[in-house]
Length: 399
Image 1 (cartoon, one colour):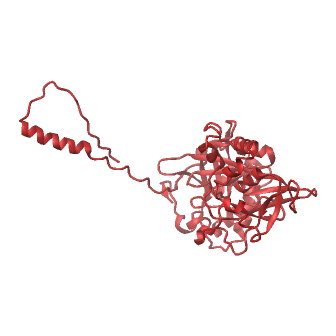
Image 2: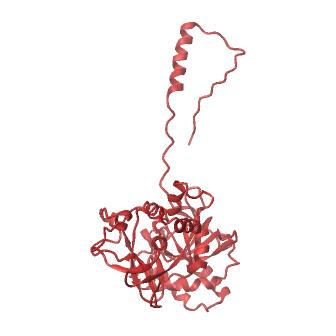
Image 3: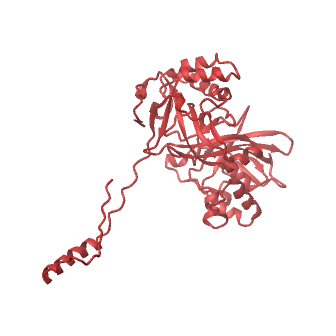
């Protein structure tokens, strides 16, 4: 892009006087040049993921990770891929090849001993090719954290338990907006729009924690009878997500230097009269379902592994693929480890954007709520792949 600017010098020495008529004409020309508005800057181009093949030694910290800890997560994804038809693409437009391309790497995974980091490293280096990711000329992006919320609830309303968790209404698509449906906003639902139109799955005791549960997408509910049930994402009202931190910041309730989830939750809980109206400014509302067995379950359909499952934007990064993450933890320690792309999120958008799953409970909440780190990642794809990206070379490939 070439920028053009006009400059007025202002020096008088050596200036030759011009005839009055010529001077007037020249002034008119200059006036036209000065008054003409500058052309608007070109609109940014569409975001694109570019892959560049690299050696494993180019992965920052490759020799330092306890790679065996990532294998349980990859095994779960391999089980899912093995159940696909052989020709089914892995990821959008087959960026991860097709399911048949994963049969050999996933088969070899079964022979890797548990807890053997050296064997795990040899496995990855034998079966996968790493690719550095970039978005145009940018190689870094934002990495945040999430966790499995833990709430107290009941199967019946009453006492402290007055906040409903709704099942998805019958006939409502998982994403109404994608089907051209304009559904109730959060404010309308909180005002009672779904009474008699949707089933209350459970009742919980705290509206702030219920809202955070919707942001996280899954949680554990400790019931008043002593049992523990798990709930998971079951669609939304299709409205745009607006973060609680952004809402409080826009209203001057918190500062830009302290927008962690801990600060947001503490402020909302300490201002119960203001909190409902402010939370209604996030129009997105999430529905739930009861989960059987282990949880939580990510968008890839597998149980998430704390510290090893990563939420990504599936428009750019295929679910189920290994991802080498190079970022930092909230306390500043390096976070360089093997992850597996197994989940998505309403706020996880873009070629280089990730959300680290830290587990359940307050310790995980503390880490997830404070994580807001810059970083990058590398995709690991099978060395032998079919389809449109079967012949990736060390040259950049635009996706």
